[in-house]
Image (cartoon, rainbow, N blue to C red; front, side, top):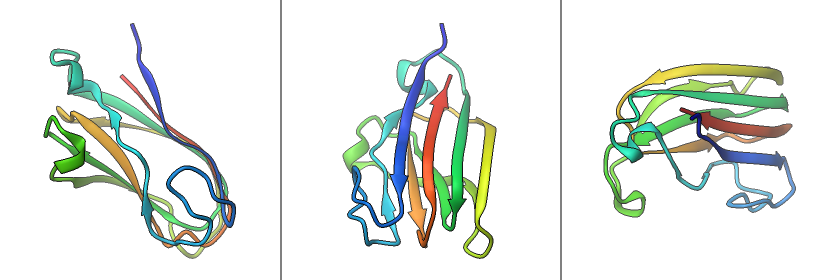
Length: 120
């Protein structure tokens, strides 16, 4: 059985949505369960980015801690840049016994994050 969780969905620059207040350039998504949350599900997970004219850097951050709110987070992948607007569908497979995953959005200065999902 494959599990898919949505990390971010339909976040447009300048429009408040979820943790984004409509004006901040740097912010975090909510945390979602990663593959090792269920112990024994393995260490492979695929994060898929769908973006339109995005001007931002999206860092995938993970933790091995069981409680997301007090966890020690570390970067495991970075996507996008702050110079060229990016329209893309980009899946990436990440290996690690991560318990939680989130997105750290940096320099959000335009475009739309259509979705970021994780599957395992």
